Amino acid sequence: MVETVETRLPTPEPFISPETAPFWLAAKQGRLVLPFCNNCNHAIWYPKAFCGACGTLNVEWRQTSGDGTIYSFTQVHRGEGPYREVESFVLALVDLDEGARLLTNIVDADPASLTIGQRVRVVFHDAGESAALPRFIPAS
Amino acid sequence: MSIRGKAHIVGAYEHPARNLPNHSVPQIHAECAMAALADAGLSIRDVDGFFSTGQLGFGGVSLTEYLGLNPRYIDATFIGGSSYLAHVGHAAAAIAAGKCRVALITQGAKVRGVIRGAKHTADTPEFPFETVYGETNAAIYALAARRHMHEFGTTPEQLAAVKVAASEYAQFNPHALLRKPVTVADVVNSPMISDPLHRLDCCVVTDGGGAIVVVAPEIARGLNRPPVSVLGHAEAIKHGGRGPNDFTSTGAVVSAPRALAEAGVALSDIAYASIYDSFTITVIMTLEDFGFCKKGQGGAFVASGALGPDGVIPTNTDGGGLCNNHPGYQGGLVKIVEAVRQLRGEATPQTQIPNCRLAVAHGTGGGMSRQASVTLVLGRSDA
Ligand SMILES: [Zn+2]
Image 1 (cartoon, rainbow over the protein chains, first blue to last red):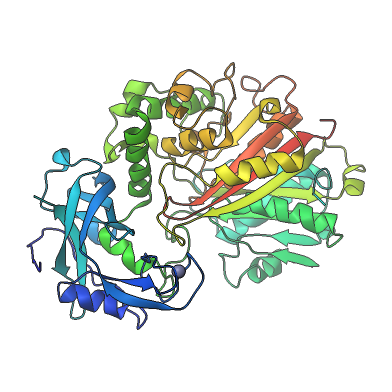
Image 2 (cartoon, chains in turn yellow, brown):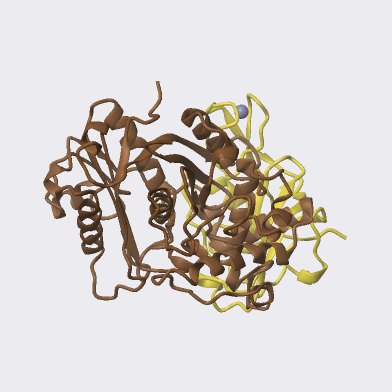
């Protein structure tokens, strides 16, 4: 499901290289894609053109479900850079159902209500012409 | 083949200042180099191996020129705060192989205007996927702390016990940035930085540096200082490049047993530990991973007083990075210096461990998403 949620969080434009452009462009289109290894089927995070799990260049982009589980989270009260002006925000590690562990934000949720193991799903926040940031909201 | 006993630390120096607004960074390196060489009883002209992080200017070359060195062996390994422990191991290996005989390791740092950790450029592959989400050092360790609490029942009060222990030692260190003893209540009532980590769960931020001199045994024999033997050294890189990285353990799971095996000593023989303490949770995880207590029991372990002078393993007797010094976000060199002080019997009198013969020093470089871990085992030459 494509969903755009208004956010008070900064959405800095990421640095985009030819190697990683498909990730950002897909996010802009409302899809969470990752490189997968054609040899060992590993879901590769962070996105790159190499599978470190088995040592091969033989990888391809595949779409994921965008569903996952919170591995850990923290409410950050002292942001840096573009987040300096934000009173607080939630940084989290989310385990995608496909196996990758992403660093991301949980948005549109009361931080006090979050728990490790909670199910979440992806949303996308526009970040410039050719990218959107995948973030997560509680699955309901 | 091992480095056990094939190289000795004969000079060690920690810059006494914590704020150096009028120093240049190479100037701090130079002051530390000269003081460590003076401690050893050697001249800068004796140096034939030079080790630094290479963060300044053109790799290790700029500082070599600044110091007028003529090294026949050079190493500019940069693995964050653990770099300097790696340098000691690399120096010992180079000395054992006959590549050099007098190795100088220097650190100099100013925190204002310095980019933390690895240089974040467009060519840093993980950078675009992390900084856009507001990642900070404290937030990354907060993720580790919360997961540790979830899996093992660790509490904020147990985290605070690490800071309390450090502060009780720091009161005796005239150079420590924070000398006032604090309580568990002080820590948990300090402002929240990134929950569950409070301000007092975080290390200090300082200018400064230090230097270490490592030499061949035949050089050490001609000096008047009590030599400290490099008995074991091991490195490990923990990362997510082969699959999800857990946030509840450190690279010490690998580096600690390897270094102890090289040294041929048991953990129970270790009298003092310098444990990298960027955050309170760092210490709890690392102590577990060394095997000072069972995995998951680190919180109860530190809360029992294990780090204190009469505890199971007196730790960071200079006040550590949490209270004493963490120059330029890199606390590894200071960790070595305090271990050398303890082994020489030159720690502050109130914190000196009687007859301290064997010590470990651990350095952590980077965060939890990826990190370097280096363990050194050091001993009195009669150990
Ligand atoms: Zn593979």
